[in-house]
Image (cartoon, rainbow, N blue to C red; front, side):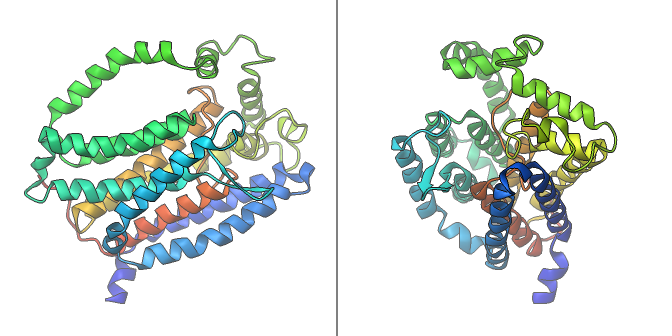
Length: 368
């Protein structure tokens, strides 16, 4: 049985994870020389802390993990409510302070917990068949529990992370066999409410959207970070300016260079070769996640894997897109590359789940 599990495991996603993590550590090493490599040192610790989580989650049958998802969901909702009463950091109530230098962001861990719980819930709704999800009351229950964490994260406010949740939910609902009429109806509703939501956004969110739509304006203020990011990536050309040699990175023009704009650091100092490689690696990670979802032994495994694919897809698209001016800046980190303990642990747990599901898979695809 053990040999079969090892043979079925999609080891390529682990290889991709290792390469992305190494690239991230190299970029952080260069970007943090002015602070005596403080964040680099912390990131190394977070990677080492994350590895046992990956190993443990990959070994325990995911169906056993899913059994505890209801309790985990209740706990994470409690944490998301509690964080709203903490002191704001950078204008958002998203972190619990753990001493003077560490902080815990519950919305990061909440991604994987929400995916696990929704996979459990959708599967329960489909005991009598996959088409059962199309019953309005059953779909309504799933959407109710899906929206709760999204609503709480919007209240922080953290629109980027909320969009990551929404992307994962869309991937999972679409995979569950939902009727096309619901998809079409949802698209119509979105088109109708977008103008209404736009007028209700807080000033800072409106400013970011307007800055994105008019990138040539106010380069010294609202569009400063984006302008510096594009200058950094453009200056790197094919092979980059070299580690420790990027002008925007090393002279402090690029901010925040260890989290939101780490891709810009890589573009400036390592060039298109590195950024192109990173993009390809993320595409491989997402497509392999989708393949694992298609070949999972059961619907629960499929829903978990496709939800994780949605998370990685959104983070890749949004972070890379915002650094080159194709999407609004939302503060979404680049998985395995950006600095951050909560996100690193969560991403490693996601990889552990993918390895777990792939090791127990069968050569089957989604069935109606």
